[in-house]
Length: 355
Image 1 (spheres, rainbow, N blue to C red):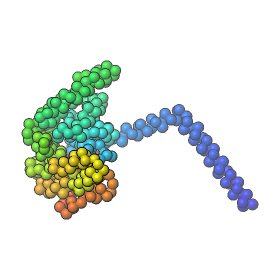
Image 2: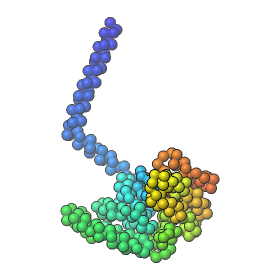
Image 3: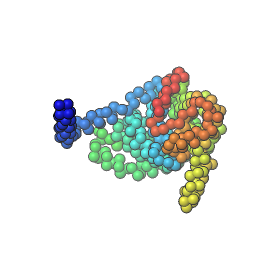
Image 4: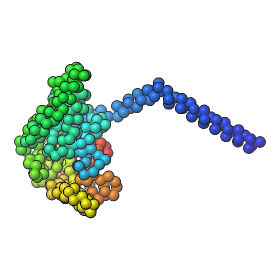
């Protein structure tokens, strides 16, 4: 009797499963249900972006932490929001996609600060222009950089000029007005304050990245809080002096052991040209230990690594990247990744990190 009940129960359960599967297949193939699922997914995705950036704080969001050595991350891009102002430092490859994926308020973008003109720092400039233009940026996009920035800007405007016209013609002046299309070059001359309004001061700082001269880092000061973004550089006295007392020093890093090992492997594989290119990078970047020394000398509260050369894509490589750092700086070190957010509330010592 018991076995019959069990068999009957099993048959009932199996039948219910078949019925449920059939019902699911009918529903999932229903255009109406498909449309509702897509609408819910879109709504959920659009609601994920941060809504509290800036205000009475400096907010830093990493929209690119890679160098050309490695994959899995966007290339150099740091978003800085303070009050109502929003600037990007560099626009490396894939960074425009990352910025929109992170939900950054692209329509608020006030300007782009280029540290220098290597391709991994400018590649997505046209895409950043488009992403902010179609989201309602109210003016042409200012692009700051050293001598040569006008050539870079003219080149992008020429390359994208037809696109500007096509989009306005198709979507109308009301949606993408021609008066706000295009980039405007702002040439920086030496160490200088390049922006000072609405309580925000941005200072350009010359750094050492030969043969590029000058290359720049940028310091942001707002409501008693401060950050400095190094750009590409060796350990540099001028940068350390400019970073004195800074809350957050964001510094590029090259792990020399990994670069040497990669170069050796390329030579063994017959790729001598690439091997030499990698070896050549050793003399114009900063090792993690040197960056830690720089942060100590500047008295920075927090040191943040970015622009990894090469990109540490697993736990072993991340451990190698941090090799020896704790002996120089036992605490106050953060390895950023794409999407990392740092928030510094004004007129306080508060420092919040969202990995």
